[in-house]
Structure formats: structure tokens, C-alpha cells
Image (cartoon, rainbow, N blue to C red; front, side, top):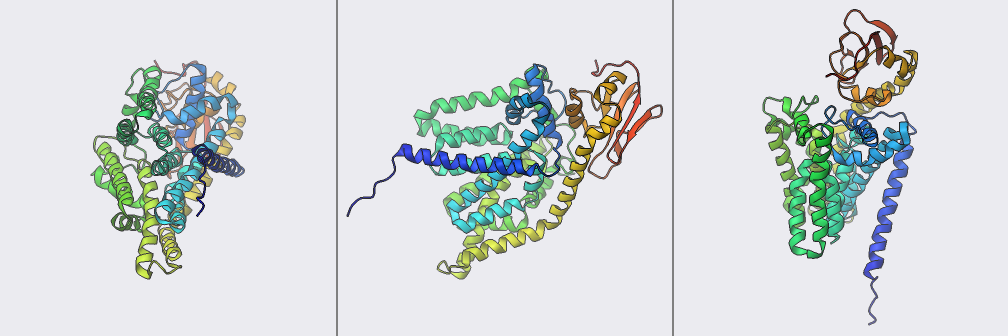
Length: 462
């Protein structure tokens, strides 16, 4: 019998690289096309845009805004060269990351349980309470889920340097990745000595990019940690009486109960790799719970990486359960298992997805109206000449970006003289901050009100 020639390793590597480039390219094109519809960015992505602009001007100030996160600013700094297009360009990157997360869940589940497991995993992620909302707003959770799922795929495929690079990217988005990156680095150091230089590089980049900018931009390397222990956003576990228990509830909500049950089934009956992945996801949840107990916010978004692995396991578990029920030789077992899981998840999340869709539309309307309201108020230069600018804490990253101002002090108490940009945000409140007597109304709209009491005053406090 004539032996079948196998592709040379270099050809195999080029094939993998070409496939990866194609997937990334398609994701970027689809993400760019999504901007044809009205959009808005969340608080953090606009702050990253401000920081990218400041890095280019050598005026970085991380003392206000969200806690420092290196990975997004590695993008927004060069994107700042495109001026006002920076947020839109970042949104393309973030939305492409969300699409790559779906592809990663599909690839991982397909590897473990077949194509129908992959279909179910991608659908579970797409229908989850976190994916569409955070991806649409330009948060980094889609990129994080993509980095984590594809790191696992690369590691299982023996592409350990790629897995290390993806874990390093994930570790530049969330500190919960650090223990996993450290463990993988130790394993690579002992099992693959030729990769030690890459391990050292990853070990240097993490502290340098996490703590260096805060040391320069805020005067203290631990400023991001202090910010993360500050006032949490609505819905964070820190606001509950027992934060750790609240976080467990958030875990069930983020996974959805049908997906959680299917993932647990995969852990029990899906083999050694599935059990290891389930242990990793559980470890991630435990780390977030410990950090929440220590005073960090415990925002449900922090659980996304575990939920991404959970989605892949859920696809595997659904197909495995159907195969055990109907018999592995029954051809329709896998698609039935996948469709039952998808339908169950959709039944749980349909209401949330409708609510999120309405909020996204409201955010887009508010963001889209800002420039017109600003022009009616006299424009940026007229407002800055009048006095210092103040706004609500939730609107300050948008105002900072649109008016080319630093984040610091924008949400300070609006004492006269000042120009106050009052915003209607998206948790049911009216215009914020409250209006004091003595201000003249410049313009009013459903989402914005500009009031002013002109007079000399510094933009930044002493």
C-alpha cells in the first residue's frame, strides 16, 4: 500500500495562519458593516478612547474614569491618529472580538463533541445575557471570550506559543487570567524549554503594562486596584448583603440554567478535557468571588470568560445527553440535543434580550443627538470660554471625548461658575446631575440639557 504523504509542518502552519486570517478578516468586515446602524459606546470604551488620545499627547491621566485596562489602550492609542473616528474604529475591533468569541466557542465545542455541539455552543453564547449587549457597546468582554476560547483550542492543538500569546492578551484585559497564565507559563517552561523566551516576555509585559501607566498617569501603580474597589455600577455583587452569594446567582444568570445544566453534564460525562475545562471555569468563578469578598465590584461582566467556556461545554453536554438518550448511532440525536438546548436558552433570555435591545436603541439615540445639541448650545469653544465643564459621572467619558477634555473633575460638584451638561442615562433616572438655581438654560432635549453660569474657573481642581 502506498503511504499518503502528509503536508510539511511549515505548510500546515501556513494553512492554520491563512484560516485564522480569513476568520479575523470576515469578523472585521461584519463588524464594520454593523456600524451602518445607529450605535453608542459604553462608558469604558469612550474612556479608553480618551486615554489613547492622551497617550499620543503624552498627557495620560488615569486618576479618573474606569480602572486601568492595558489591552484596549494598545488599540486606541494608534487609532487616535484618526481623530474623531477613534471610538468607531475601536467599536469595529470590539465587535469583531465578539464574533471571534462565537467562532471560538464553536471551534472548541466542535473539537470536543462534534459540529452540532459547536453550533449549540455558538448559539448559547449569542443568546446569553452578556454577549450581544457588551459586544454592541464596545466593551472588551467579546475580545476576552475570544482570547480565552481560542487559547484553549490552540493549546489542545499543540500550538503552545499561540496559546500563550492569547492568554497574555486575555491577561491584559482581566486580572483573573493571571493565575491561569502563570500556571501555563510554568508548564511551558518545564515542558518546552525552547519557548522560555516567550514565557519571560509574557511575564514582563503583564506588570509593565498594568502598573506602568498608572504609575505615570495617576502617581501610583495600584491606582487601578483602588478604582476597581470604588463605587460599583448597578447590578454588581458588591452591593448585595452577601456579595459571594450574589455572585453565584449572577453566575447562574450569565450561564443560564439550561446551559449550566448541560455544561455540568459535559463535565460528568464528556471526558477528561471537559472536566479540566469545567474545573478552570469553576476556578475563575471562585477567583471573582474572592475578589468580590475583598471589596471589588463583582460586576457580572467579570464572569464572562467562565461563561464562554461554559457555553462550549453546554454544547458538548447537550449533544452527549441526546446521544445517550437516543443512542449514538441515531443520526438525529446530535441536532435534537443542540436544538433543545438552544430553545431552552432562548426561552430564558428572550425577555432580557428585548430589554437590552431597547436600551441599546436609547443609548444610540442619546449619543447621536449629542453633537446637534452641542451645536445649538454654541459649540465646544463657546462652552469652554464660558467656564469649566461639569456633567454626571455616567456621561463624563462621552463628554470628555466629544469636547476634547480630560476625564478628571468632569463629574465634580457643579458649583457656579460652570457649564453643566445634564444627561438622561439608562437606569430610569431623570437628568443628572441635579440643577441648582442660578443657571441659564442654553438648550434642552429629551436626553440632554446644557445650562451655564459663566465666569472664570479652572477646568481641573487643585
